[in-house]
Image (cartoon, one colour):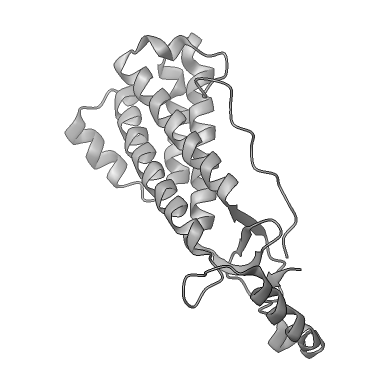
Length: 208
């Protein structure tokens, strides 16, 4: 049974007949939530870890841009500080890739792509509206706060997804630093950007 908050109920009165089953489902779930939300308290430390890991990766991304562009730290900081969104930074790194040795270009582009993938997920976790919680999958569904006439694009936030993106953040951060400081592990690319066998990506499931 799904414990969910259907925010369209007020605009769609027939759905109110399901309110009793929703309440029963929430009680049966025996889950502690952050007060006033549908976010289980068990997810909070994992969300915090993911945000910290992303921040560290973002800082390394800035330094990689300075390095590839040939900027000193003072100039580099002024340059990247003016780029407020993560998407232009990833695009900029791709545009700068012709400046690196040909053997490394594809890997630099991969880092830009993976940075973007992690950043997109982090953006959804931090900024989206919580729409539902499913005890059966232990996942929170978030969606963009759009008008009710616009189809909602769901993102699932679960322990597995947060662990995956936290780990990927660390792998990408480490690879960026390896290139910048000429660490020999940079050439170990059997699972690039992962150093060892990659974690299994979280399943893409249909939300509400």
